[in-house]
Image 1 (tube, one colour):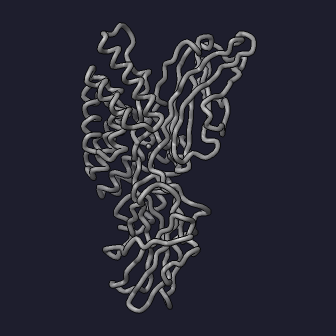
Image 2 (cartoon, one colour; image 1 turned 135 degrees about the horizontal axis):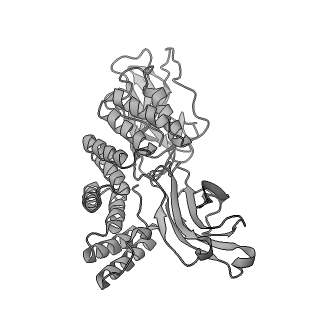
Image 3 (tube, helix red, strand yellow; image 1 turned 180 degrees about the vertical axis):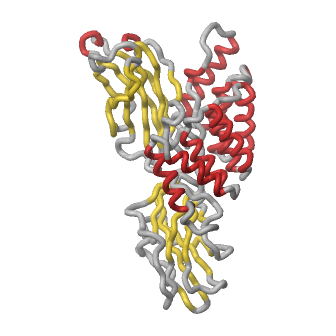
Length: 428
């Protein structure tokens, strides 16, 4: 879930002693939120001291004054004007004392953050055996992935055999060229599932699974499905959350004979999905709405349209669509997660808690939902229960979830000063 990120910064007033709350990170910290919280510690400052926030978007080449922390108490909240790399400097003024002069061009920031609150979009395009598959066992893998903040090699590929449920690597750190020729190992028989994983610089991870299909028919069956819950450690979940809400993939369309209206709705949904994975939200939303006019119970279209509304900050409409999806399928996990995130965006934490509890009732192994539930409980002021949820999340086998949960426990656990923060600040 995308929640406000924070760190602790120690500020030095002229003539006053100070200790940093912790060593600065080695590099920019990835922030998957639309709000950045800077938790600071003042020493030997009067109640009238003002904390002034400055930021840079050009590696410190120029500085902009954001403003003064209105209540003079940690944290200072920064709402970035967009995604990208930011540097921050805090300046304290206390009467005629000051911690430093306003930053000058090329001054080094106290902290760096890379703000990226939009997960990648990814979808399988197919898996087609080569003409000489019987001899060389080459399968042409195709996919589409889009994000404004990919590095040079954001893609990883893996497979899972029906005879061995472990995921095995096909290739890691692959350039996002949309194709890869996979030589299927000779011992792989039966049915195979393929997993596409994409990562962006903001730390989002999105996974999409293709199959399962018989090895001999990889090119003739094009069903896809979202990754199983818990497999995507950063971005399964939607927005925010805040990973934005997951898209449904055409695989979930029911099989069997369909009316002309249903077939037309399915075609419109596929067209919308084509636009969605390319970041073309307006035509995607139009196709999804047209599909819903023909088939109001097409939950794939309502779920994906809700995700677009969330990205466009139309949280009320996103929530309405998620709830419509849940009327059709009460345990639809992407809709439960999306509704939880939409409620958080509206600051309706009690409703978000209820959705996350429903999600955990449907899938008790969803470690990310458990982590998010702890975050929401913390924002509701239930610190004790939040700690219990984070402790449970810390016991998961997913390393990324473990790390996040342990950071929260380190910051807000029993050793942390009560009231250290009023809002959860996780590195998302």
